[in-house]
Image (cartoon, rainbow, N blue to C red):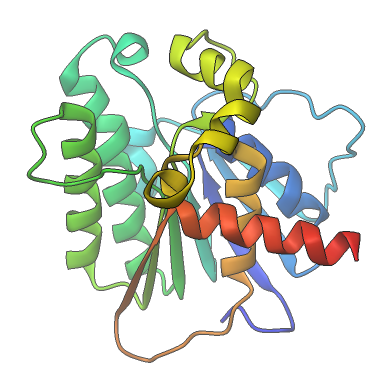
Length: 241
């Protein structure tokens, strides 16, 4: 159980925007004693960060055979940062597999292998009844994970993500350029829609992992974008002080 003495973790999606930031942070996190990364392709280089061989275990595998790849692994905390786009996936069916099928399979593995927490990146507006395909699939994934009955399921719903991606995304490029102005304009009811940096989302997830289990019954908590950004502003303010 992830208490003060530390925890072991599994991370899926380490080559993505949030996942890569989470990988870097977990490698530097003393409370994370061991980290198993499940990836579909080799990990990118981490400039300026030495890979601790005794802490990091990378499994490059076919996600359609996830149970087989993780067969001998045990973890207290499971992080899921899997996600794609229609452009990258090429079809709605392939998109659903990455954003719905794989996270649910990971959740089922976590439940079967005694993980105490699963922490997943979803998206603002996730709703299984949404008319928007992207939001609907994210909502369906959340609903399916709830049914599994994990001891703790933490769902993080960021707004537009800021950070350097391999592929070009027009919306995110505009958000980066207009970020400071958008933050000033988005006040009151619009505050929750502010773009958020991927490293801040990763830090938020990392902090959740270290919080002692709150209940013995299945526990689900959803964190909206405003909660993420507010938390990071408080952390920066405390660090500056």
